[in-house]
Each structure stands twice: as C-alpha cells, then as structure tokens.
Amino acid sequence: MATRAFDYQILAQTGRTFRLERLPLSSFVAPLALLALWQLACLTGLFPPQVLVPPSGVAKALADMTASGELQRHVGDSLQRLLIGFVIGALAGMAFGATIALSQLAEAAFSPTFLTLWQVPVIAFVPMMVMFLGIDEPFKVAVVAIASFFPMALATFDGIRGVPRNWFEVAKIYRLRLFQLIRRILLPATVPAILTGLRISLTRAWVVLVAAELLAADSGIGQMMEMGRQLFQIDVVLAGVIVSGLIGFLLDRGARWIESRASRWRTA
Amino acid sequence: MSPYPHAREDRPPTAASRGALTISDLDKSFQIGGQARRILDNINLDVRPGEFVSIVGASGCGKSTLLRLIVGLDTDYSGELRLDGERIATTSLDRGIVFQDHRLFPWMTLEQNIELALLNTDTPKARRARIVADHIALVNLTGFEKAYPHQLSGGMAQRAAIARALVTEPKLLLLDEPLGALDALTRVHVQNELQRIWMTQRSTMVMVTHDVEEALYLGDRVIVMSPNPGRIRHIVEVDLPHPRDRRSPLLHRLKDEILAELTSGADAEEARDNLVHLPSREVR
Image 1 (tube, helix red, strand yellow):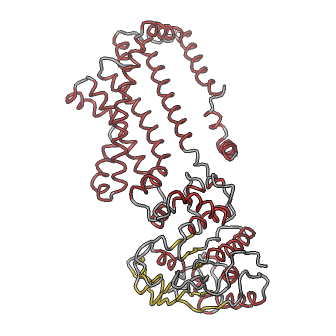
Image 2 (tube, one colour):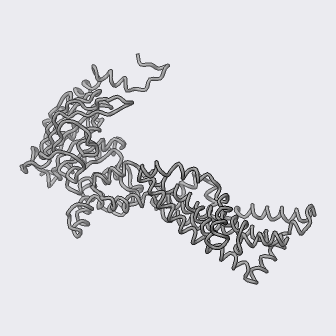
Image 3 (cartoon, one colour):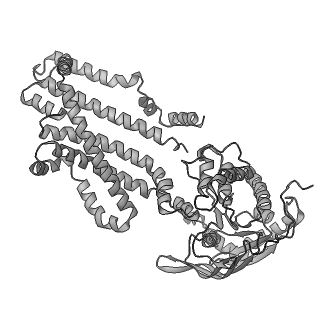
C-alpha cells in the first residue's frame, strides 16, 4: 500500500518523466518522427542514395545480416567482451572506491591521480593499448574494464562517504564489530549508489567498446560498421548505429529496473 | 487498583547499584576556530538507580553534549563519569540512547531494527525473537513488526527507537530530546507512554528536553542548566508520585518558576545572543 502511495507521489513530482519510464505510446513519437524525417530527406534527393540510404535499405541490410547470422556473431562478440571487461572493471572499481572511501591515507595517496586519469577520455588510451596488447581480445576487454572502473570507483566512494555519521554512531552504540558494520549497515546503505554506478559503468563501457571496435578490431558491432564504411556499404553502417543504440538502451533499461527493485525501501 | 500492573512503589528500587550514575567535576571543551571553548563547566551530579532525571536549559548549554559523553560517543573530557562505579570510556550495552531523530535503518523492518541491538549481547538466539516481540508490545507497536520505518508515523518511529534502546535492558537510558520532533498531541501521548515504560522497566533514565512541562511531568528531579559555559544552575525536586496528573498545581507552580528562571537575567542575555541578528531588526 505504501508503495502505491509512493508511486503517486513520484507521478506528482515528475509528471512527464515518469510516464516516459513506463514506455507508453508517446515515447514512440520521437523515433517515428526521426524515421519520417530520414525518409523525407531521402525523397528530396539532396544526397545520393548510396550516401544516405533510405530506412527501407537499412531494414533490408539488417534482415540480410540476421539471416546470414553475421549480425548475431558481431553482437555476440561485442557483448561477450562487454561482460568480461565489465565484471573485471566494476569489481576493481568497487574495491578501489571502497579503499579510498574507508582509508584517508589511501584517499590522500591515490585520489589526485585517480581524478586526473578520470578526466582522460578512455579512447585516448587506445593507441597505447594497441601497442601493448595488440588488437585481440585482451585489448578490447581492457578498454571495457577501464571504462567501467572509473564510474564504479567514484560511485562506490560517494556511496560509502554518503552514509550518515549518525548510522555509524548507532553501530557504535550497539557495539557492532567491523564485519557486522560492513554487512548490516555499509553494504545495504550503499547498494543504491553502487547500483547506479553499475548502470553508468555498463552504459559507458558499451559506448567506449563500440568506439574502440571502430578503431581496431576483427569482429564486433563497431568493426562491422567500420568494414561497412570501408566497403562503402552505408546501410551496414546505419544498421550498426541502430543496433548499438538499441543495445545501449536495453542495457540502461535493464539496469534501471534492477536498481528500482533493489532499493524499494528507499521510499522515505 | 493501579492501571500499571508492573508499577513499582515510587521511590528507588531495592536492587542496589543498578544504574547509579556519578558525574564529578566534569569539564568539556571544543576547539572552535583554533580556540578552546568551554561547553561544560564543573558538572557534579549523582543519579540514583531507577531515577528519572530531566535536564532543561537554553540551547547551547551543553546538555546534548553531556548525554554524548555519558553514552560514550565522545570520550574527550576531564573529570569523572561513572556508572555503578565503573569509569565510562566508550559505548556499552549497559547504556542506551534515544536521539531526536529515530535513527532506525530504512532497509530493515521494525523487528530487524530492534533485533540489531541484540546482535552482540549474550541473549540466546532462541530467546531473541520473544524479547523483541515483548519490547514491541511494550511500546504498543504490536502488529507493525514487519513495517519499514518509512511506513511508521513520527510518533511510532520514535517509540520503535525507544524499544530498540530498551531491548538490551540497559542500566541507564539516555533520552536526547526524544520527543522534540513530534507534534503537540503525539508528544503528550508518547510522554504518557514513556512514563508507563519507565515504571515498567525500572531502569535509570536521563532525559534532555526543551520542554519544561515535559521535564517536570516525567522527572523525579529537573536539572536546570545555564549556557556559556554549560553549568548546573539549579536542581528542582519534583516530589510527586508516578503516574502523575498533568493538572497538578505543584507541576504548574514549578513550571512557572523554572520558566521565569530560564528567561531572566544572564540566561536571557545569552538567549538573545543566540538569536540571528538581522541588521534591520536588531533586538534593542
């Protein structure tokens, strides 16, 4: 019952945003308008059809690539890299974020370096990494891991630092031991921040992975687009744009869903 | 017949040395802007086992600081703080505290919040559920065991916090403006509850409050403090048996006296200094 009351409250507060969350008809207006505009631009003949492929051409390319299994192979390769790199990067980020949040010494020692490196676009590391790791799997996994590491470390740090002092006092009054404090108070209190960090890491890692594949790869959704560009198959490039966008969207949705499930108690 | 079946006879219980608090020559300073500022000055007080002591005073008189020292969250003081003869050096399950904010953990149910307090007691696991249920009943929250804090009203959450503080059966319960955030009606209700709980529980209680009427209604003694630095100015004995009648003429007379004391002389000057001074509305 309280949950329902909360939903109404959010509705009142955020109105439109809330309805978008639920994906009603209105959220299809923008993509359809974009599609119409695209089709219209093709009909005017402003660009030759080889450059600006009409939506129908892209749909055909998507269907062909799906039928041949080529699309699934590229998407599968990309998602596998994403998964491995994300698990490594997010875990390392969590451990690092927790360390600098809990130890002032570690914070003083590492946080300036961390904050500086964080300002460097992950793509800027690519040339160097290609030299060290080549363009095979380790390189792509490493790119994803780096991209996931930073937002995750920052979210974990903020999450732990954001735990109210008052709660530590309560823990002290009831004589909780360090392990009990971590398990019963720190972990649950930081779950919302960590889940948000996971979502941001995941979507960021996806964007960076596709970009890295565009630069150097032998398979994957980005490489598929790059090959399309080189062979002047713009329909394949646009198909890649649509697929990578959709996957990013679904990753974000899925993570948001988990986030809202896991922090239900946060309705105060 | 008494409406409180477990009510004790009014004066201290026979059980010796359970919850006797001794404060002697207590001083406390904070560093503010590089300068030591004295918050508590030469506090001397003996609280008898089972006694209910209220502390009132203007804001800034150090009364909350005093409770933080007694509970052991702050151990940087000079002088002596002893509970049953033992010097207070850190927190202990012998000393419970209820704050103005309930400080329940939002991801735990009422039951889980209270059970957390028993985590490091030697209470056998099998008996814990029973003890938690008893304390939920003590604060009249039976039926809300599975409720989350955000589902409780302010008064209910505060009662839950009282149950959590009492579940370890502390010798001494400290109450730091526990009813300060409640509306007037809820306040009266929880005051009655608190009186009933104290009469049932028999632990020593020390309550800090802004509300003189509340202090008198609940306290065997009311400590009146003056600010800058915090000192005990006056101790008022409230010689009335519990449960008390709010309409008692003695309570009203004492209330007028204490209020007059708090709003006159040096204290009133201090109180004015504590106001925010807007340039155009200077207090003259």
